[in-house]
Length: 152
Image 1 (cartoon, helix red, strand yellow):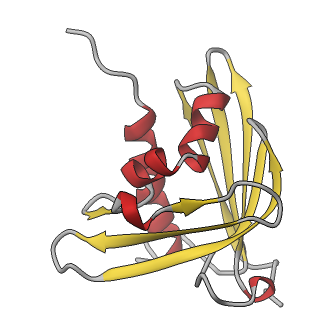
Image 2 (cartoon, rainbow, N blue to C red; image 1 turned 120 degrees about the vertical axis):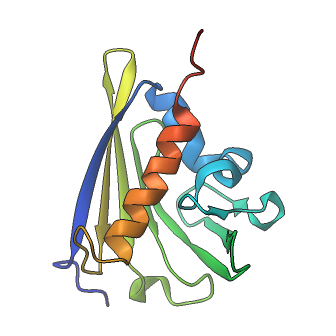
């Protein structure tokens, strides 16, 4: 079992609605566009999502410089559209009970959404070069994906 006392929380506010933010987490086409830190990519053909309780997901990140590949996946524990998504995060074939758990909570804020990202099961702190920094950079990519086009 994971140690749920370890973990961290990141909060972001987007101009995108809870529905648009939800789609970014659950639509394979959207996931391929952002679920990686800057400097990496996620090939669309590597993404499979069955966003329902007990369903699974898998995706691959590719380092754009080295070509190194990391395959990640997990199991959905809770799926409440536009509000809450709980899933394990780790190796696709590993025991879900031994993997970290991510909880995404969405709240409407004006015309946008406040997203709370909570990761339990691993330590993380700013500057760690690992879990915290990786998710911080990945959520930056999500922000880029959700950012409305600028008008000139």
